[in-house]
Length: 312
Image (cartoon, rainbow, N blue to C red; front, side, top):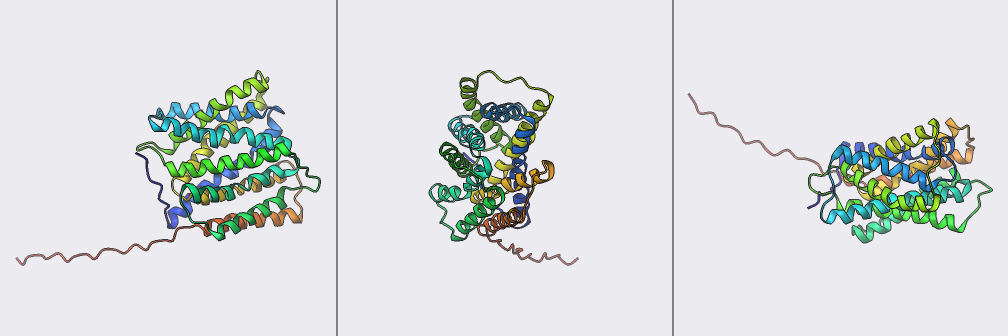
C-alpha cells in the first residue's frame, strides 16, 4: 500500500513550493564546488561520493529498508534520479563548455510534461509548455557564450540526464511512498541504490580513488550532506505534496543559481543580456507554477445546531 500524493492548496501549497525550491538553488552551487574544491576529471567518483555516503547515512538514521515491490521501485528510482542522472550530468558538464549543459538540463520540465501525460494521465497544458519554452530561452541567455561548442556525446548525455531526472520525478509521484515510510527514508533508498549502481563503473573506468586533501574532503562533505541528502529530501518531500510537473519547473532555478553564485563568489561577469535571461528564466519558473497550481477549494463551516438547555 502506498500513500497518496494529493496536491495541497493555499498557504501550505505555496510554502511547500518555496521549501522545495531550495533544492535547485542549492544544486546551483555544485559547479562552483566542483571546479574550486574537487579533483578534476573524476565525474564518476564525484557522483559516487555525492550519493553513496549520503544514502548509507540516511539508512542508518531511519533504519527502514524497502520490502516487497518496493525493492524494485527503490532501485528504479535510484537509477533514474541518481545512478544515471549524476554521471550523465557530470559528463555533459565536462564535454559541453559554455553552459550548453545548463540549457539541456533546463529541458527537464518539457520531458516531465510528456511523462506526466503518459504516466499520470495529466492532460497537456499549453500554458506549461509555453512556460517551459520561456524557461529554456531564459537559461540560454544566462549561460550560453558566443564561443559555445556542441559535442555529440555531451549533448546526448545532457538530454538523457534531463530525461532520466524528469522520469524519476514523475514516477516518484506516481508510486508515492509505502505506508508509514517518510520522505527521508525514501531518499535514503534512492541514494543508496543509485550509489551502488555507480560504484562498479567508477572503479572500472576511473580506477582507484584519488588522493584527497582537506579542501576536497570539505567539498565532498558539502555535496553529500547539503547538496544531496538534505536537498533530495526536500525534493522528494515536495513531490509528495505538489504536482510533479510543477516541481520539475523549479529545476530552472539551478542554472540561475549557478550563474548568481559564479558572479558573487567567482567574479564571473554578468552582462545585460544575462541579467535579462535571469529575469526571463525566473518568469518561466513562476509561470510554470501558476499554470499548474490547483484551485483553492473554499472551506465552508458546517452549521452549528443550537444546544437546547432544559429549563430549571
